[in-house]
Image (cartoon, rainbow, N blue to C red):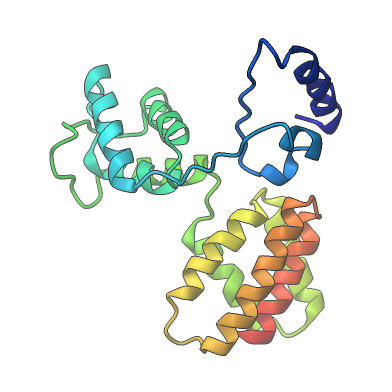
Length: 221
């Protein structure tokens, strides 16, 4: 909701508060205007465990008569990050788009390569950055000799439509598991990633933040 719409809702809440209760659901409470926040009680919900999401998706698939492979169910649960609504949407998309390949019962063990098409589709549908793209970006930050070339590389990444928030999130996971990166370098990079994420939430330009990230990686990798 825009700030103007929220202000309009504020007036409606004031008028009808004796006979009506309002429930607002949001991902970022900071985007709710203060007059609305002061009139509500906050309840924070933790993301669901992956096992709980998988169990529910298997049940939905069974009830709907959709033979979905276990590997695909697990992939959906992984990329939904504890958001059940998102997970159900992904399951519907796999069914509608017909990318699952040869169906088998959800309780059967999947083969090694039978769900590759579904995995790629789900990652792309969820806005996730493919590992090859992420690795190319990191290598460019390490090897490109000057800032001008690095700036061109970040521009290419942005115009391809990748989300900078997603880039920062996946890059954090990648660097945490990198045994060759010094702990001090990780600390500097993660500190900058936090600032970039906050700037993006507040509406900063994606390309500028991508350049900021690239220059940070070049300095500390």
